[in-house]
Amino acid sequence: MKLNTKCHGVKEYEEKDIIKFEKGIPGFEKLKKFILFPAEENEVFSILHSIEDEEAGIVVVSPFIFIKNYEFDLNKGKMKELEVEGHEEVLVLNTVTLNSKIEDITINLKAPIVININKKLGEQIILDNPNYAIRHPLFGA
Figure (cartoon, rainbow, N blue to C red):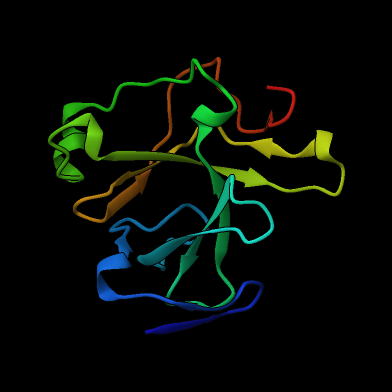
């Protein structure tokens, strides 16, 4: 299948690549199906792109590349919802807010996106941790 994205050209994907977000993603609640692909400009970043809306793509990054001690507990209820059986099945990503000034690029540590990579189920969760900010400087980390 082909997805004609607004900013990233045509992306080919298969049914097995589709990640389902049953609750949507805040700001994109009506969109439930996404694919994940590396950003061509910088492969540290990825794009989580809706296959239901050509214009809806979110820049994401693994927080562990920049913040070595980033951690949180995924409660049993959330693990059950995402059908997670072990930590090796979990991919954690955080949204990135880009800016033309590198020092103003931020990462949202407060609301990670958690994906079961085997079952292709995802959800953005809100952490109750005052140490994690919504706009944490990515390169000041």
